[in-house]
Length: 180
Ligand SMILES: [Zn+2]
Ligand SMILES: [Zn+2]
Image (tube, rainbow, N blue to C red; front, side):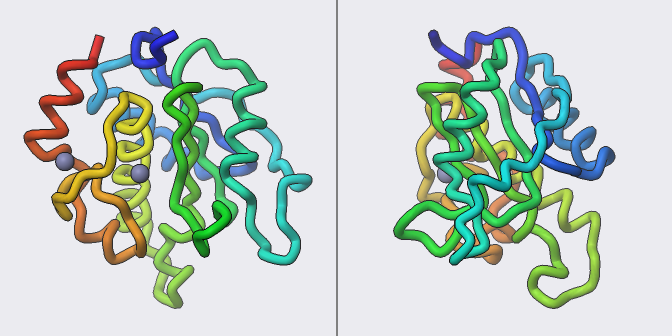
């Protein structure tokens, strides 16, 4: 199945996620990809997936767990727990295009993670960028060398702040060629 042909995109909270943030993500995803987007029921935090030595969740294992929830569309999960994949200290998110499943973590998108003041506007901006980035992968887009393009890989929060939540013209045209 080509997941970008799915009827809708689900935004799936894992554990408690602020409702305003989920709503903003949902609205922005719907506007960006032109597909009905709905907030799905909350999934409880899978504490069994926590790597206790690292204090993080292996994001690929999390995606495997989410696949078994069996949504009839593409899904973007949102978690407030730090994620990693072996070989990287952390990841902001991960996508599995063959399963139509993506996840973002908001833990490192918070200004207070870096010792700053709580900044909801900044959290929202960063969350929208990472959400569009991961769903972009579900549409088959790869990482883009343009540091302003939303498909640019974020190695650090600085990369996230430099990129915009927009696709560059090349990525935009690739997206339009697959959009149903
Ligand atoms: Zn990526
Ligand atoms: Zn691009």
